[in-house]
Length: 189
Image (cartoon, rainbow, N blue to C red):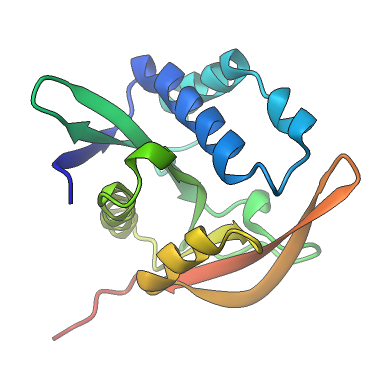
């Protein structure tokens, strides 16, 4: 496990978050999405969106966290997580709104070259701590059906499918997703 930590994202982190998102999507999802769709993703537009998410979140319960690996001479931003109260993006088709006590992960990515070093686990643990502080009692996250790595990672942390599914329409290609959930109630010993 690498030395690292998680902190709240700052505005100056937006370009690195966008770079990680673009790099990870083009690597991890290259067989899932058409190549031209991934090639058209614009890093500048992604950075602008992340800057807004960091500086003007929709609520105090919306957060962007980053994972940092500490090297001997430098620190590297290696991953990020974004989450907030479950909104319409967290819903399956025609599903009624989820209760306000449900958090929703919108993004959880670690750049592939920094993977399997504990950064994803640190991001998820930090997010869970904040969700509990914010009064959330459960959380949901969408995973692509063909993203076995993400499903295995969340499953190892106690997340389970909740029976909801949907498909994203990406230029007439339907990309199926399943929703996972976890109970945030602390386990008493």
